[in-house]
Every structure is written in structure tokens, then in C-alpha cells.
Image (tube, rainbow, N blue to C red):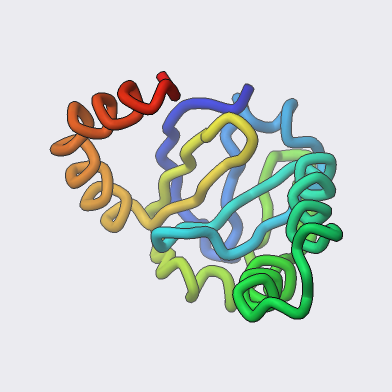
Length: 146
């Protein structure tokens, strides 16, 4: 399971160092795609196969506008990225710009994926979520999800 929060810096060659805790689980090749809420999603090859199958499977008709839009957003902008022996990966410029990544980033493990956030955007987002954590827990408890 991929969990935890790790702070890193983008180096002068625009590389990010995948936290050592995630390296073994993620492997030497990952898929990076635009995420939601101003972050990037990073998937293992196996998990990406599962996600892409759900996005483009027979239940996700290409004749529905929302399906086409989400496929273009997630699949069309996805990139396979190699993780070198030191755990570094080069995030393409279009994805760095999309997530507004500057020099300081945060890696968030979210069970089946890693999210990459610009540190200042993450801190603002985390503060907002923390302020409503109790009501979120109550909401999910009412519908039997927790």
C-alpha cells in the first residue's frame, strides 16, 4: 500500500526524486498524468492498465461527451516516465506546468497512486480539508463507507 507524505525539491535538471518508501512498490517505470485538485497522479504500470481499462472499457462509451473529455484529459496527457537507479524521474514540462510545480513539491501516497503537489498548493489544500475532516468523516459514516 502506498501511503505517507514526503517533501522534496526539483533539482536543476527538472528531476524529482521518488521517495525511497515508494520506489520498491512503484517500480522502474511509472505513468504520470494530470490529476485532480491541481496535482499529478503517478501510477504503477499495473495500476495504470487497470485505470485505463476502466476509462475506455465497454461501460465508458466514446459516444458520451463526459467520457471522451475525461479520456482526453487523463489518457491523452499521460506519459510513461522512467525512474533511474537513484530514484529520480523527469516530469515533462506540460505536466509540471499543469500542476504549477515550482521548486518544492510534496509526494502524497494515496493507496493505489502517488500524487505530486506543489508544496504551497498542497499546504493550502490540506488546511482546507483539515478544517472539514470531522464533517467528512460523519458524512461517509452515514452512508456506511467508514
